[in-house]
Each structure stands twice: as C-alpha cells, then as structure tokens.
Image (cartoon, rainbow, N blue to C red; front, side, top):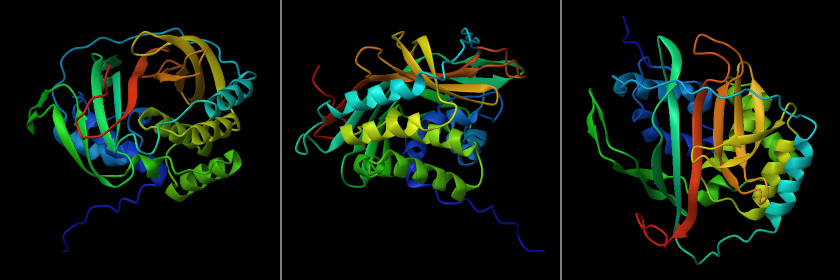
Length: 307
C-alpha cells in the first residue's frame, strides 16, 4: 500500500497572500480549547488550522464580550463609501524616499472557542515591519506566550521572504476592475465565503495591515460601495475604545465591520461579532476586535517612528 500524501493546498491569490503571512504568527500565539477559528479570524482557515492544531493548546480562562446588535443602514453605505473615496484622494501619502519599511502598530483581541460561548482573549499590542518595495525579511513583535508543544515563542520574530507592501497594494484603481479581480480570485479558489463576502474580506485584508496609496484607497472604497449587502453601522468602538462609524457586511450569523473616524474617515480598526444565537454564543458575541494605532515608513527593520 502506498504511503498517503497530504492534500494539495492551492496557491493563495495575491490580494490575500500578505494577510495570511502576517497573521500566521498571530494565530499560533492564540491558545484555543479546540482547533477551530471563525473564517474572519483566519482568512485562509484551512492552511492555518494545521498550525493551530499542532501548537495551540491550553488557554487561560477569558470572558465572552457581548455588544448590541444594531440594525444596519443599507441605504447609506454607497454614499458614505463614495465620500470616503473622495476624501482619501486628497490625503497625502509618504514620498518614495521616506524609508524601506512600513511600520504598523495595532491592538487587538480574538475569540477562543470551546464548550460554551466564544470567549474574547485579552487585548494586546502588535507591531509589524513590512518591506516596502522589495521582497525580503519583515519583523513581528507581540507579547510572549508559552505554547506547551512548541515551547516559548519569542515575542520578536523575523518573518522571512515577505511580500512587499508595494505588491500588496498594486491593485486596479478602477473600482469595477478591482471588484472584478476580487470576484475572479474567489471563483478560482472555489471555496470559502460567497463572492460578495470574499470581496469584502479581501478589501479588509488590505486595509488592515498595509500602507495604501490615496488612489488605491479610493478604489477600494468605491469597489466596496458596489458590493451588494454592504451596510453602515453607527456608534461603534474599536479595540482602543475609539468611537467611529462602521462599514459592515453580514454573512450567515456573523457581521464584519471596518471602523472609521466619522469626521476624517481615517481607518480605525475592525470588529466581528455574531448577529444571531449560535452554538458559539448569543447574538452580539464578539469574535474579534482590532485598532490600528500607528502607520509610518521607517528606514530600518525594527526601527520605530518618532513620537
């Protein structure tokens, strides 16, 4: 009898590849009482599941976080996103000579799952350095955790062969072409969210942990405005407790939100939660919350921007 082989894992589409790479170390630092994550917390759940199953064991107790599930406003989403696009075009971007690395500091917490409701783990800070223009090493800094099988994981980890920020944000600036690209990549994968849900997730992946040029930001917002079912949710808070306005998409029992400052339209963070009662908890159970605290360009790997 021939030895069994592992199943084929298809190549990741370019717009999702960077998010997986940057969140891989994040995932193995989140002990879970069962090896399963909602897809919003792991954009390529099948690939990350193996990592979680091998190394993520023995979580401390944490508590569920419940928020009020508001009625989304579908009528205002197109107007808001187009306003955001117009505002983004006028915002200056860094010059090409500013430095070779994109630095992003964020704060976040994600749910663990087990017997009973999903429990949100403590909020912690995260810093990542991404090569700006050329593929190469990056750097991830997160709190030290101990994983029983793997042992102590360093709180500062070099990320090798990282796709540069320039490649991640190299997207069509025409919103129709951009949305068509996202739909096409979803069809090529042939699995996961619906094509509209996958497009919303893919745009969120780019917004979360990259430095996006003004014209590309505008195209992302205008493309999102064309996704059926996108809603506006008001009076939401990010992981830094900053209040803002959210652009949201609901699929099944889960709602994903991108949170923005209501006056400047600056991106603040994300939030994901249940909108219906499920085995993982009642409606309003938070599955993930993040806040971007700083984006900058720096000259050296590990260098922090001036205050």
